[in-house]
Amino acid sequence: MGVYVAYVYVIEFQKRGLPHAHMLDPAAIDRLISAEFPDPIAHANLHELVKVHMLHGPCTSARCLDEEGYCSKQFPKSLREDTLYNPSGYPLYKRRPIETPIHIGRRTVDNSWVVPYNAYLLEKYEAHINVEACSSMKSVKYLLKYIYKGFDRAQIVVRTVEEDGQTTTIQEPMYNEIQMFLDVRYVSAPEAMWRIYTFEMHDMSHAIIKLFVHLPNMQQVYFNTNSTIPDVVERAATQHTTLTGWFALNTQDEEARQYTYVQIPYNYVWKITQTRIWVERQRHFNRIIPRLYFVHPREGERFYLRQRLLHKTGCRSFEDISTVHGRT
Image (cartoon, rainbow, N blue to C red; front, side, top):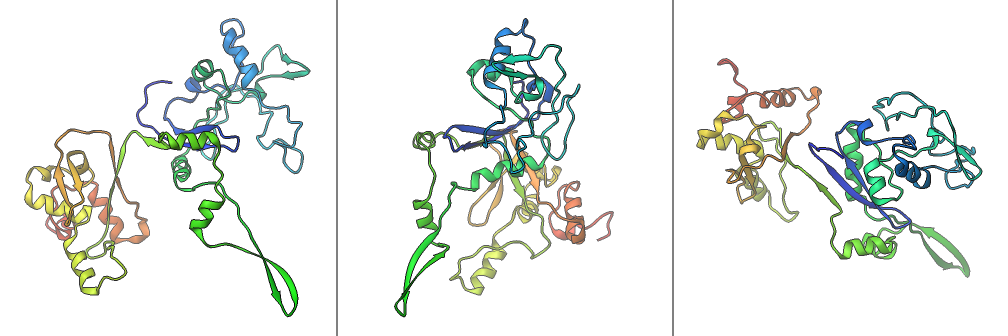
């Protein structure tokens, strides 16, 4: 499918039990995805596979029809000469008119009925494989929610209450999450096998390094519910964040002062010890993406701190990073 720059995927199991992968791949759309019949002479095998595996419909069953009787997948699609970018959804794929409609049994179809596919995958597996392009950064958020959403489940509790000689049936929600997980999971045989063999449920090519952005004494502090206030204060004073750890690193390591806050993860590793510190990398590893936490412009001072962190090098304190041309 081409040379990738980065990838991330999540495996999801459908109700029929078959796994499919949600993937992000920043390659050209038309080079990877087609929504047309190929040339029946030059690509006879692929043409036949599209006829067998990659046609939607007919929309005669209630499976894909909405309440008004229209196809919920919006088939047949509109024909167009070029692929159009759609920032709020799937691209509008190129579906050119064909001179001779294709007859399959009693059906007459054209490119408006073709489900988007990748030619290489279709010829390799000879099965229905729908390939769509992710055209929005929102796709990342949509993709990663599959890791955490858990199993499909539905539950209702019905109990009988007898009061004053009268029996009443009451429906009520159940809040026992552990019992709910055990009782109402929907796990198909392929998914059970997948998990028993400990196959990957998700993977990504790059490690994301989160870099905190906070004002002095405004960092997040984690503590146990039974901790005393002095313990919490001491923990906050002695445990570095990635930002205060950067200040400490610049104080001790002259080599580190040439890097900005965002460049540090390429050369140092954030080591989770009792105090938490940046440690020089022993092996070069370029498959990382440092990420500063988003700060809204309305936050004022914190927003401008984030802007300075993108450009200033060798800072050893909050006062240092707030000083520009000798003025703080």
